[in-house]
Image 1 (cartoon, one colour):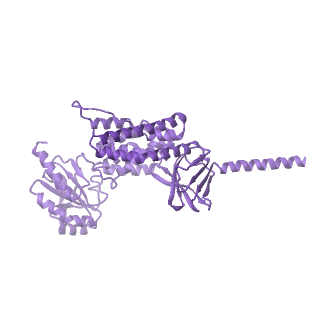
Image 2: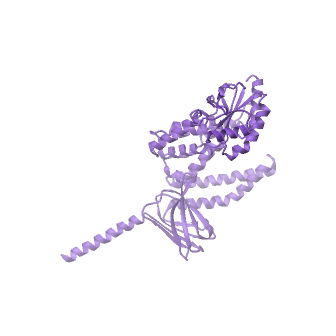
Image 3: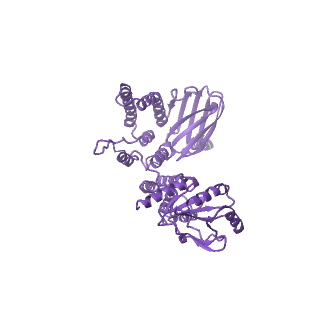
Length: 472
């Protein structure tokens, strides 16, 4: 009886150890790289456009290291940073018990994978495309430089078409053999639609219609139900191109395209979170070079950063963002510029709407701001040059004290300047994050320009006066 109990105890102990080892080895990647020096290696993952340290290991003198994890890696794209300034990238899915064998001086061509299909398919594709890329680059160079229809052009175009057909056949072979693999999802998502041949009535290519149609099908290959793709470069690279290259960089165009895309992925939580945050950040005040890019930011925050939709943050943080957007809303392009009523340097109440000139420049500044000090003379020069031609200036002091503001104004400017120590006169009217800030109002007091440098003002004036002369 005692013997049986002892055997049972040992069996149970061994079983528990096996289960524990299995838990520890949810991920077990063995890597052998011939010729790789000993030292630390880091495994870097990505989410959206953010990189993070996923794991690390020590390479021994034989070029061997092991990654062993209790919890599996998120399926996605990873890069190994190796000793000796070497590196290689890899695609990993749920199969995370595998072995890699290669050579330090020939990493991709020599790579052998045992135990996982997605890394193997990824390396096969890298080797295939790497062999083609120099020839494709050479053909593209000839096509760009040679006259269309010339023998050099036609020969290069034929060779380019042949290489692209071979690439397509290579990928189609993988897609047909492994239709459900992560690699197949990854590569299909990265494919771009064919550029349609759309012609105008006179036979010329209609480039505008081409872009519209191309953009319509740009996301066809991306499965928005597959969060794994967010851990690869595919989605973020497509998003950058879609918003920054395929969309005219005007607030109305960006808003229309972004709004449609974000609404499309609302049911796909991780895509909705990534798309709405990424686009909003691109056009946040101080980060964008698009005139009135803040209008995009305001729209995204107001439409999608709501307590009901923005599941990724606390309600109080969402409310702060929405308040920030509201403070910016009144001073977006195309809106009627709000009036500001405050005291000037002599204690006399002055207002923007009290000015009769057809064009008004609102100049927001702080006496402590170095850029404001540098631009003061240029602002005054432009005012004096244009004050008898239909342009007036209205200065607003911010982030200062009354006496400091008064001294700076008397020293620097001859146009109307106001200041409100309570800030109530300008709050949520003309948004200013960094001084100096310039706004231009037209004859209807509509905001027609903002986020300007002083040297851009005269171009705006000339344009507006031409429009008025033409009855616009």
